[in-house]
Length: 308
Image (cartoon, rainbow, N blue to C red; front, side, top):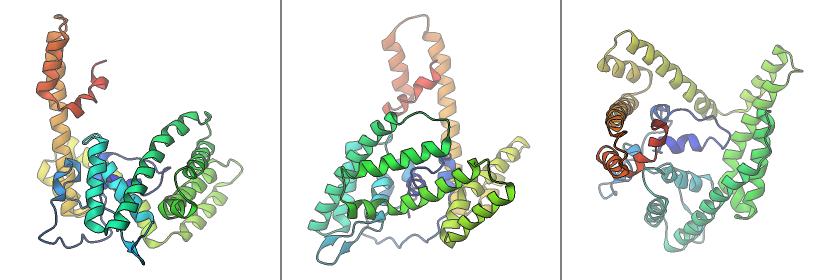
């Protein structure tokens, strides 16, 4: 079973990002594999991965070679989704351990080399995206970004490696881009636009159609949940509502998100009230002591938005 964050990442670089609660609620299209008694404890790496197993069906090919395909990228993205909860170096080490668990020495070493290239590519991509020309045309901007990504890969991967790692996400992005361009084409009538979208839909596999529909379905559910809360529905009723629409496991994950969000807002309110009391003292050390008492080091990185 894959990380909820990583599952959205596999949909491609141009996919719309929805909230963390939606990630956690996405239904699984496949049952989780049986967990051997000797399996390591995957639940302890970062809290957001509780209830999941590392994604990516990484395998060896014939001749003790690494099979370079999208599954390798899925494994990397599973752990990289934990950035913010763990530093990058800790994530790199954990990925290495997972590769050692799944692969023989030679393919594991090759996979670690691919990981180094993947991380370097991701870092370089930040600068490439900053250098892209500004445009108000969403479709044009998306195409420029995709083409820049594909050019950049040549500096870090062979053609075969890039094809293996990124062909699945590129296919998703090209489909998303085609839909953007159709919707932006003012020369099309409503009938023509619907026909072209339907033609794209017809090319999707049943699994791809389900993956596209899942985020919208969960967003609609959460909108209904918000309205139900406004009408006084309690936590138990909300759980049953989500469980009926998704699954008991998804409902439990969303309940955890609700509790974490409520706790975060409670601590923010307490922090802001105590910070206001310290405002006249002008003592940075006291303010930092307050932060340390309420928030972890990683959580403190998010405080800027609440200190304006």
